[in-house]
Length: 261
Image (spheres, rainbow, N blue to C red):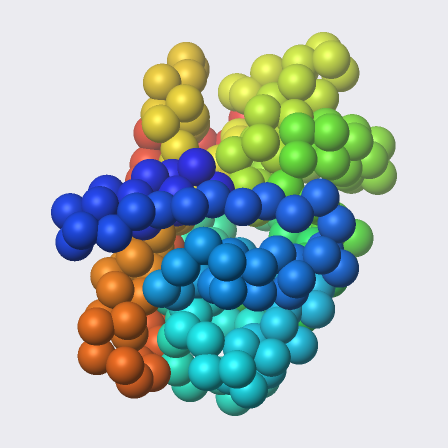
């Protein structure tokens, strides 16, 4: 989220706008907070972070003719006012590269299915496509749903290794989950040479870790910058704009052929 905020701030500030950040404690308060901002603080537009129930907020915004952009597609058939990130390419490339190193038991710590109102299986789709392309059976038990946190990364990795002691690699949906995965591997008396770990965001902190980690590169900063650019254009032009989709990539660092334990 911080990289998205930084990208948005960098763009809107150069365009002569100020960025006001609001984080309601409860999801049910999100609409009222957004309305309060637009009505009482002379806010020109709102960038909405997707969460459960955001589709209703968008409908109310449209009814009241309020200008908005969402960080992701938030409901089926949404065509305008969003900046989406497709995780399929990065997930596919990460899985394919692991397979090229001899990995066959690859775990996936997936994003939560209920995080957004409009669910996408892009991370899972990339992983599945690479396995099927290589003729490797897709095993649902190698996939765990997480919630992007360190704690979930830790617990889900321990359960993966307990069920699949021959696990040789794990792909994580987020960098905090990655840190939890590394801790779980170490607490079990293993290291990242025994189980290769692929990070999910490639945040600045992850780029500084040693040993270095390969990572799916999530263009969070660019997503925020494009959202800032879009909301400024919507405010200035007074019309909705077509949504755009950014793709994840994959960066290779310090990866070795599979190690048999």
